[in-house]
Length: 487
Length: 146
Picture 1 (cartoon, each protein chain N blue to C red):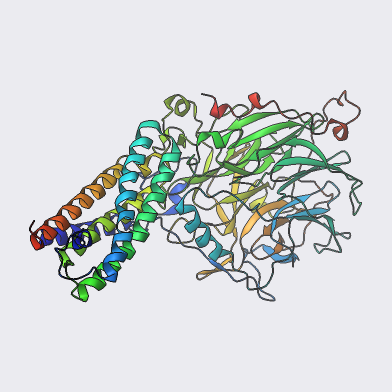
Picture 2: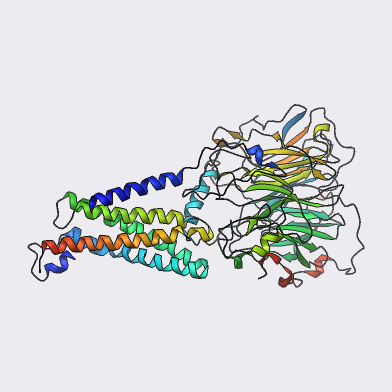
């Protein structure tokens, strides 16, 4: 009996070892960059491969690395976890700083272990972290690429991420609503508010809490990203109402509808300046092996469904989601351009009309926050993807690197934007810095250009009272929300 | 159980402290792992994630308390307490190893946390538990023929 027992224990041990083996990680990640990524068979190792970088921050004088023809400098330092940067039409820059909401219910033993592991990567030395959840205004009055005036425009916000401005109103996407403040360009404080434009899916879970915001080219609608409440629907579909989607919100009335769905965690919403098409970068799902699922950048079709949670890259079914929905898988659109697995893209900005050198004149910058679910670091950089005729055309190229030093992270890029002089700004939430990457020859644009250029002015709204009067009573009709969860 | 028989006067010595501790600890893994099999079956039939969460917590509690019981058993065996054998410990370790493996499977997201391998491992764990119980009963009967 006991001999059998020992043999059984031994066999189990071997099984466990075999299951833990992540395989040789010699996969060339560039095969997963572009419109047609190589997708290996999904694997579910017993222990997810994890490699986290301890955050050590930047020492005096240290900067990220940029290629020849570009120059990098610290635009603003001593910030409190800057997530996104937004340029107003007059060239002023808003830096949104935030921390995620706390108090998420943890239903499984795994959630506690994950929370503990993730806390190791936060790092940043001892002491109380500075107060975050604020928006800081940076002004470069003489357009020489350095900040001349700095003031905190809004403080005490509820985990803000996206901002947009139009016609005397500043819109802020917090973790559970879009709010509006009266704000005139050039001012250093808001003129009142906030008023609720529309509530958004929020807590208590609010797993992917970053709500990004873009103003439509007709200036009538706001587009807001609402990430999923889980990795692959493991909290149940009832937790995903209105989530994994981009909403279209009427700026004046707050009326909203789901514009596109099946997008697990979309961020970096931005309109292509020439085609007027909405683009986003999306964080795809984890725990299917180190090389699944590639995160991606895609144009967003009105009414489009992009697969989450039932499938990825078109009809690649995720068997973890039960019951299966072949009807939804059949509708799933394959995204335009894969960025490779676990790079965590969170920001995107087009370069058309910027002052970047010729090599970066027609394309998009994407900020990649960096991986955890693989045994080597992927991401932790800003890449450039060339475009032609409004579509990606060519291999992604590293532009801003040096965020990783060995097994430590000096910083992690998040949101990107073109500043008022036509240079690239990168929000670095781990390094508490905004970096400015400019053409080395010092060229700047003749005029400032805002992050949300308005090309066609829509008919003025009938409701003269404006958003301030519409308020919370114009909640979105919930039946309109999330076609992804209709049964 | 060994000390249950002692009250009938079959046993030459009083139950030791380790036996008392073990009698308090050993029901936990037995009950938890059996219930985990039932909640796994419930998830398999309903796709309702609450059952999967139950399984994960039941496995965790069974592993923690079962691990303590195994440790006490090892100490008792090293001290040559009567009624403790390495073969019991081997089977106990097998039960725990199966449960730990099972808990890792249950840490996956969604359906594949249970179907098919979580369910198979839950059933194997219960089988090993039963075998372990039978072995203890057999060795106890051998010591105290009725």
